[in-house]
Image 1 (tube, rainbow, N blue to C red):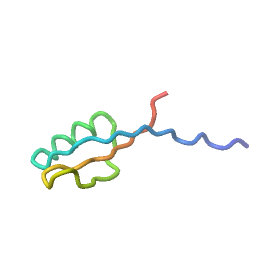
Image 2 (cartoon, helix red, strand yellow):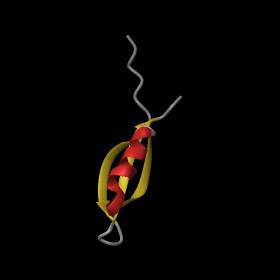
Image 3 (tube, helix red, strand yellow):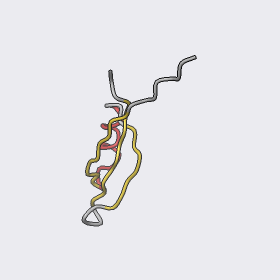
Image 4 (cartoon, rainbow, N blue to C red):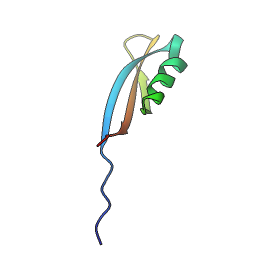
Length: 57
């Protein structure tokens, strides 16, 4: 019996402007990116979003 092939992931980080959050996240979601985490950016108005998606073979 063989082991299942593990999923390979690719990752992306991108600025997330607080005044346009939904539109930015919707765009990444349409491209297959899943939001993993959001952390503070350089200023209170900026955030950094981390995304992942399966690598397309």
